Image (cartoon, rainbow, N blue to C red; front, side, top):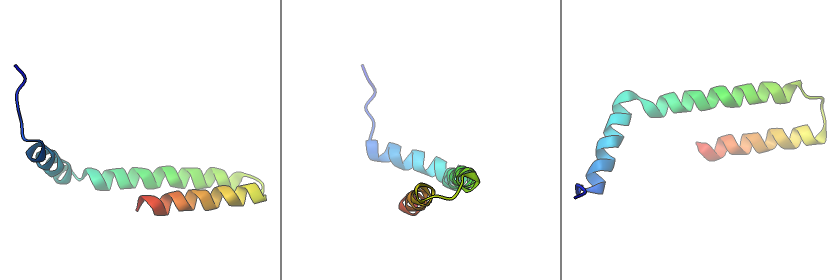
Length: 66
């Protein structure tokens, strides 16, 4: 028979573990690393309207996540 549990308590417990381990900060740092690498690659492309659209799109993604 499956064990019953309180979903809210489980979420709080897992969130507490994540907070204790600093998972949010680690994930944000990793995200920044990937965006930085992406911008390096974009900046290596020749200048064009398409490049500017990609840069604007990437910046929108960054702002959306914060």
